[in-house]
Image (cartoon, rainbow, N blue to C red):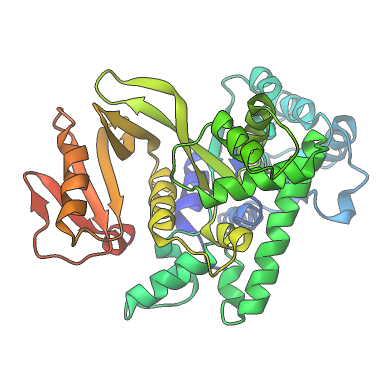
Length: 399
C-alpha cells in the first residue's frame, strides 16, 4: 500500500484529541485503506494490538452487529484498562450507530475514528448528538500528483500521463489495472452502480429509477454549466425523456446525489457584495473516470473535465469553493480559506485572442486586489497580464 501522507498526517494530528474523527468520501476513494494505514502507524508507535478495535462493517464477519446496542456491547467487552483506539469502517451499516459512538466516547478512555460513504453519516441528528465533539476529514480520489506516485511514474511525457488520468480518473484501484482498459471500464461501471444503488436508491427508497439515471446523465453531460432543478425538469419534459416531472422532485434527487458524494455542488456568489445567489449553481462529479463511464469514453469533453479536476484539487487543498459573478461576467472559481482568496479561470487554451480577452475580462471585472489566475494547458512565455497570472494547469497540479 502507498501511504497517502496528506490524509494520514491529518489523522495523526488529530490523534488523542477529544474529538471523534469522521472520514467521509465517495466509495472506493481510499477510506478503508487509510484506516489500515493508521492502525499500522499506531502499532509502529507502541500501541498494542489488544488496544485497537478495528471493524469493517462491509465484512460478513460483523453482520450480527446491526444495531447500536450490539455495537456498544461488542466494543465494551473488548476494552481493557489502557486507552483503546476504535476504528469503525462504513459504520452507517449499523442502525442508530451514533448512540453507541456517543456512549462509548463518554463512558471509556477511547479515541474513535469512523468512516462512511454518504453524507447521512453527518445527519442533523448526529450533529446534534455529537455537537462540537467531532471533526470531519473529507477524502477524495487521487490527485494527479498522487496518481503519478501510485503508478511509479516520473514526469517525462507528463501530458500523456495527464490525459490518461483525465480518461480513467483517480480511484486508487484503477492504478492497478490501468493497462487493461476493459477491466477498468468494468470496475468503474461496478463502482458507479454500487454508489447509485446503495447510497441513493436503497438509502432513499427511490422508485423512479429511470428519472434518477437521466438526471445523473444530464449532470455528467453538463459538468461546469449553470444548472437548476427547473432547467433539468424543462429539458427532460420538453424532450419527452421521462414522463412528466416537476422541479421539486428533481431538487430532492439532486440533494440525494450530493449526499452520496457522487456529485458536488458549487454555489454562485456575488463577488462584489459577498452574498450567495440562490440559483444556477454548478455540479461537479467526484471522479472523472466515473463521468466517462456514464457517458462513454468517446464522449470526453476535455474543457469541462479540466474544470472538474481543478475544482476537486481546490477542495483537496482545503479551500471553500464557489463560482463567482462579477458584474455581468462569470468567474469559474472563487477559492477561499481563512488566510486568502484566489480567483481562477480555467481554459484548455488561450492561444486565440478572443479567448484570452474573455478570460482576462472576467478577472479584470473584479475590483479587489486578491490573486487572479488563469489555468491553461498552454505553455506560454507571457505569464502575466496586468497582474493576472497565467499558469500551466499540469504544473499547478504538481505544486
